[in-house]
Image (cartoon, rainbow, N blue to C red):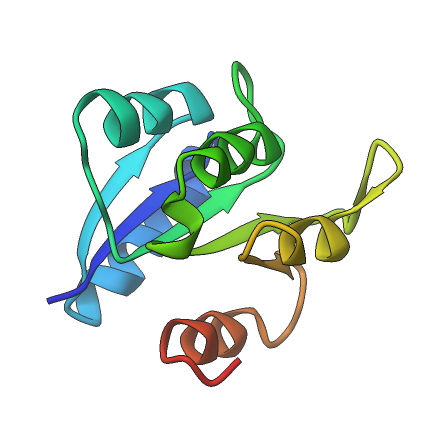
Length: 125
């Protein structure tokens, strides 16, 4: 069964994604912010197959977490999705940012959000 890490400070969104992917038979681990995810990945050596990471979080943003992952070579091992409802953050185009870090950006408000995640995880995106 594939392992998935969901990182989001919004309890409702995190639980919703968690339930959805558990129903699809993923082994899901969650983190309430980027710092908790950093601890899982770097201190506890947790290596999921996939990660869904919200960008706007306290302590450590999604971009900061992905930069750390990229620097350690984890984005080539973990299919990573950066999500946000805003495609531009502090003047940075998140789609361009993601491509440079071997991951993808998906807008949370996109009507094809689930389809894009599925296609990316299956290697079709």
